[in-house]
Image 1 (cartoon, helix red, strand yellow):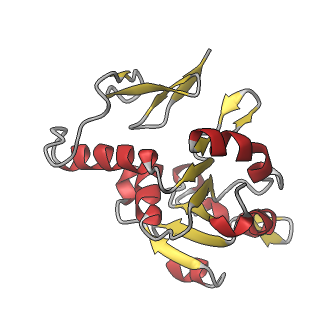
Image 2 (image 1 turned 90 degrees about the vertical axis):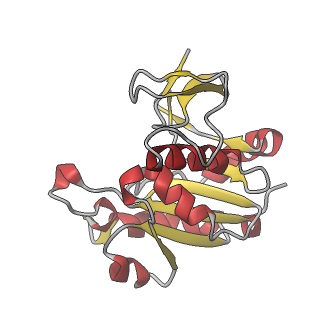
Length: 200
C-alpha cells in the first residue's frame, strides 16, 4: 500500500505563460489566493514532501517554504521540469501535476493507487481525456525518466541521440511533433517526446 510518506509531489511551474503576457499562471490570483495556494491546500494531505519545479520567479516560490528546483532545461517543456525534479526526489513514489490546476481532486492519489501499485505508473483521466502531466510513478522503475533523458539528449545532439539510447524501437511517428516516439501506454498511443496522447 502506497503511504503519503512515500510520495513526493512535484508541481510543474515552469511554463512560459505565453498566452498571459509572460505571467506565471500558478502565481495568478483566484479569489483571495493564488492558484498555487489552492493547489497546495489540496495536495499537502496527499504527499509527504512537495517540490516546486520552476524556471523563473524563484524567490516567490521559495517563499512557500518548500524545496524549489530550477528547471535546467526550460526550453524542453514539462519533460525538462520533470527531469530536473526527479533527480531531487528521495521517496519511492513521485506524484507530478501542473502548478495551475487549483481544483485538483483531494482523492487523486487514492484513485490512482491501485493502478500505480500494479503497473508502476498511473495517469488519471478528466472529461474522457488523459491528463499526461499528472503521474503517480514508482521511482525504482523510473521508465518515464529514462524516456525523458533520451528525448533531451536527442535534442541536445541535433536529433542523433548519440549519448543515450533512442526511443523504443517499436515507437511510431508522432504526427504532432514529427518524432518517432509514440508508444502504446495503458491503451493510449502516447508520444514520449511531446506528451501528445490519443486513446481509442
